Amino acid sequence: MASATQMEGKWVQLKQKGTGPGARSSHAIALVGNKVYAFGGEFQPRVPVDNHLYVFDLHTCTWSIQEASGDAPPPRVGVAMAAVGPVIYFFGGRDATNQELNELYCFNTSTNQWKLLSSGETGPENRSYHSIAADSQNVYVFGGCGVEGRLNDLWAYNVVDQKWIKFPSPGEACKGRGGPGLEVVEGKIWVVYGFTGEEADDVYCFDIAKGEWKEVETKGEKPSPRSVFSTAVVGKQIVIFGGEVDPSDLGHMGAGSFTGEAYGLDTETFEWRKWKDGFGSEEHPGPRGWCAFAAGSRDGKDGLLVYGGNSPSNDRLDDIFFFIPN
Image (cartoon, rainbow, N blue to C red; front, side, top):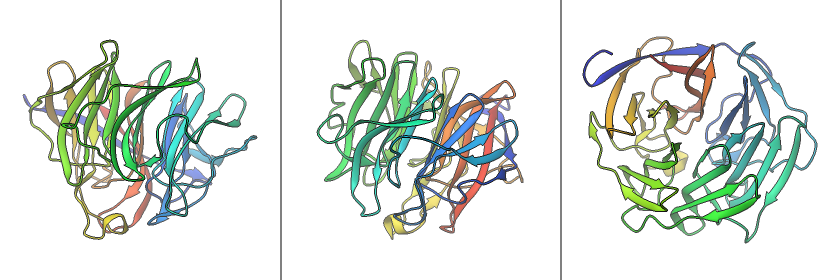
């Protein structure tokens, strides 16, 4: 540990081989075993690239396009996905006509089969740029950009019962938001920051067993307000990296101001600490937002995987980095 308020971590850039998705942002990834599955995204603002499911082998660092049966989701941006066991769940997003969606698909990596699980009036309303998290039985969906504004509702899809559950509202104090962090830590769901019309710096926690929300007053070296950043849980700590700290005057068509900082929030002490992570080095991803990200393990070490995103020059990125907290 570098100091009382600073911790040390290491970024590693992964070299890529094979046929990958290429540069994009507003896409999503999920990890199943040693494989990274990537879907969705844009190269030009608001224009979905394709609906291929790409697979990246963390051992060989090789991309391939997944062969699959069933009905794959149409191309989309602002989609969110998470894995429960061998099954990946995909929810929402925005299609080529700029319409918000609410379809829930799954892809079984054991059978390589797509399946549409819910749509229409079933489950959460249409949205994009929402956040998703999962535990051993549920896929949680929070917030995002809805048809008529930003949302602050929390839902769970029980993968055993195959049913949606709507949780109590956090109340008006927790403003509707896009691009927040969403993580599950020991039976509690954490909502971190996001864009509410401006970049936010508040934190909320939902106790699943009690069905209660509370706003969490954090302390320490608190990150500046931000949205569309990358998150992962390592132990009992929520790690965040990057994100947009000042939106573009052009909205989604332009690049705002991005950060390349990494922080950790201790979910027991509510204390933020800044990571000393080699910013400025060749191995560091640098400032970016709208990335695909997932928690994962590589070479026996847990960390945060970050792929692609948007740069301060409004260019889409195609690199992959793995952050290892020491």
